[in-house]
Amino acid sequence: MPGILRPLFPHAPTRHDAMDRFVEFAGHHPALVAAAIAAALAVIVYESWLRARSAGGVTPQQLIQLMNRGALVIDIRPADAFAGGHISGARQIPSDQLVKAGDTLKRYKAKPVVIYSDGGSIAAAAVRQLMAQGFTQVFSLKGGLEAWRAENLPLAKA
Image (spheres, rainbow, N blue to C red):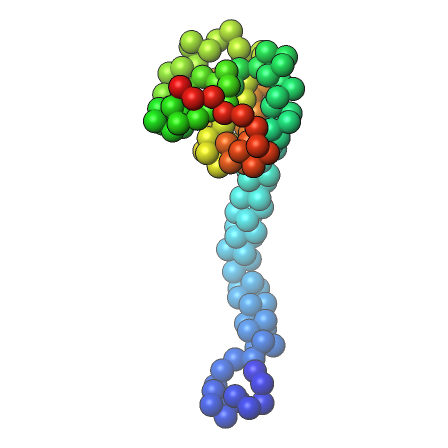
């Protein structure tokens, strides 16, 4: 604590005192410290694993290439947003019905499937849902429809 504030807070612990107290706590409770470290590592590993599984994001240009090779494009936005403008050739399946739609999309399990929403954040969860159902090439559009619009790519109206 700076010297000017020391008279105002005479009993405030210094950084050195806090570190000594932590070391003392760790010495008295090694199991708690080990459990906290293990929990932190588990969270880090799990989050890294989730990111690696859903890291299959594609840019708008990569989406065009996949579409030219026959990829299925799924718009998980609400029907009114889909009607207002969507990527040409996209199928509209609301995100809450995606699990049920897995049966109707069986023939695409080994083919590229690209999912998009407005900003792209909801699409990542949808990618994980389809991967859990056995789809092998599922991607999300990085940045969602906003990224598509930012590159001035065309939209179809329903």
